Length: 226
Image 1 (spheres, rainbow, N blue to C red):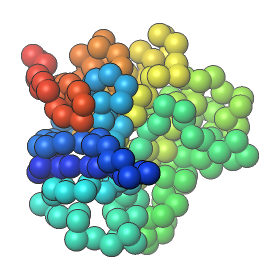
Image 2: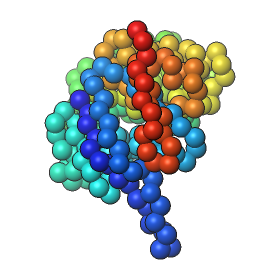
Image 3: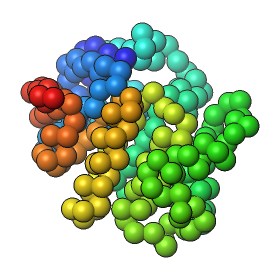
């Protein structure tokens, strides 16, 4: 489904050039669960941002279902993100003044055309992650684990082709982190393609494949025995 070919990402500031990604070749199959690990500053988040099209590579090609995303303008990329991708963040990124149901509905805000069954899809997504009973509550009324469940519901409400999770358990205690991983694992078993950045070896071991990064490069790749 995804193929990165010789991806390079360089940043320039004050005449100093920094290489964030170098010589990245990566394929992610449909239905795969891939974990990305490595020390801080190794390029994990830059790689995830590249997959999410919020960061464009300096060189190389990104093919999504054989579609060359380099050929898309910013408006087309924004529509691609809205229709094809779901994002889960470490800090939840829920809007405090909106109810949980309204927050989840934001995952459909930029879809076109508008869905006639929008509310049904929102409720179904919340039900999948066990948060439907909190639909009328506000984020501050929920625990951290419940807020992350709401964030996952927002990510999956539009049935994206790819879910990108950036340290989804980083702000959670052990119990809530395990519950979030149970949800992601269940989503993957149901057919979702997931790419997750994590610092947790235990959580990375739940993925079907793990890659390790160092200094902007992929230095190891291993599939989990199933």
